[in-house]
Length: 325
Image (cartoon, rainbow, N blue to C red; front, side):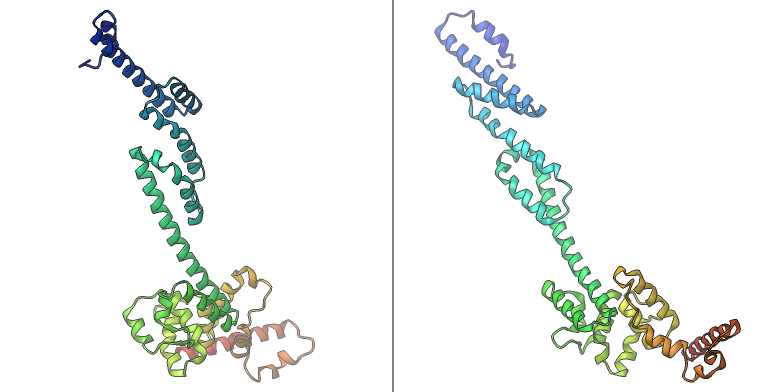
């Protein structure tokens, strides 16, 4: 018995007639039977033979031989099956799905947590839930910024302010509110200090300027134009910023960028880019140019068309020269 050789000990005790030894034999035999049952139960559990495990426990209960340790296995099949279902639904796409699955698994935690490996697994799910919630929170904010950009680009400033209010309701600590007073729909008075002291994403600063541009005086517009057209020549990040910079600088290059970004949006495929009206009237065409013969002839020939193209090119070059001055 000291060396856990129980079978040999039982065989020896069977040949002893002493009454005390008979009691020891019965106790040892019962212990060995229970040990074998537990070993078999553990094997069934490891191999996923849940019906055989349930039958083993049921037979032991009928004979009155089910120990508390064996009865603990009774909940294991249901717990493991529930865990299998939980794992089959992975990976999780939304925090709500993971939250609901974790709540569904909670009745089986008492059994599952007896396995040390499950504790690490459960902590992973808690961490994953937190990551999913943070990712969705960030996406909701990004989607609202994109929506504001699209509305401003579509010349729908009041609707853009409404979307900004939705962003405020979602996260009043968003960086854009360090620049904007959303209640007054104005830039904050200390906006220059904020821009100098904090590194804000270009998308945020551009949208803040685009939202408030009509209410800025000429000096304020000139000071903030650098946000839309930085010295390194990088074009604005947003569509609204591209349109605003193109109009403010009367730049054909920026108009081309704005038009390219405009047409890239599926909802704009059949919509006229409203901002081109100003470009066509102020950049490509000049007052009085339609008095030229190439524009007045009722039946323009090839030479007339080339003359028109040349005249437009001259206007563009003149616009560039003005910018360089």
